[in-house]
Amino acid sequence: MKLAIYKEILKRLQGREREEFSAIAQHYRVSLHTLMSIYSQDYQKKMKKTHQRHHSVEAVDDYFQRYQARISPETMGTVLLRIAKEVDLAPSLLAKIILEHHLALQSAESEPPSRSYVNQLLKDPCQISDPVLANEVQQCILNDCVYGPVVDSIRHSVGFEYENKLKRTLEEKGITFIGEDVMRAKGYDKTPDFKLEVPIAVDGHVVNWVESKASFGDELSHRTYLRDQFWSYWNR
Image 1: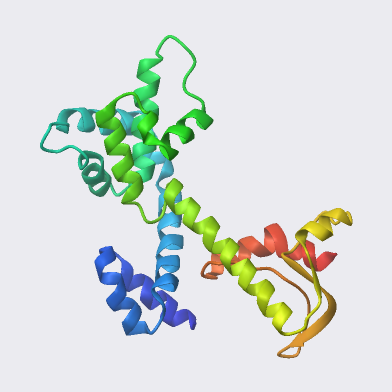
Image 2: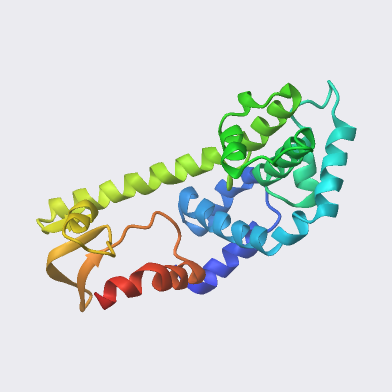
């Protein structure tokens, strides 16, 4: 994809609802999966920039007070979703803030809840003792397309799927390789998904290893993967 088209897509996605994504994908002739990946990466950058503002003591108190003031039989399951939209925060991230604050108030005289315990409750909101809050948290998780345990599971599944797809392609092409498990057994400290037993040439470049990434390759992700993984493979 040309950089100009990528930037144009980002502009078109600003302030759009998910229901409009299909039309945008068709206009630019890209798959909906590609469009969602572009959107997710851009949204995550935005959330990182505003993290401190949303997690300040004043903001947390404000969000929790809004939540408590709006809870009623008529609004059940929608309060946190509406607040998330108002403050421009991912629903799952807001649910985590409210849940942590709720648990902290319950255990005011003891240790604050551990991160693992909070994550456990987010994965299974039925374990939350307050049924109203449990419902609110569950709705946030189910309606979040970028963050939360449901999205994490999908992302992990897609990554595994594309890694298997790459493996089948290498096998179909008769390209011999060793996988991560074999490399670890041989003592490799850095392991790409597949190391080719015999290098191949692609567009005039020698390829020794292949790493599968089931996400859109924007400029930031390329720089991050180069720093954290690819240069260490290349050096070895």
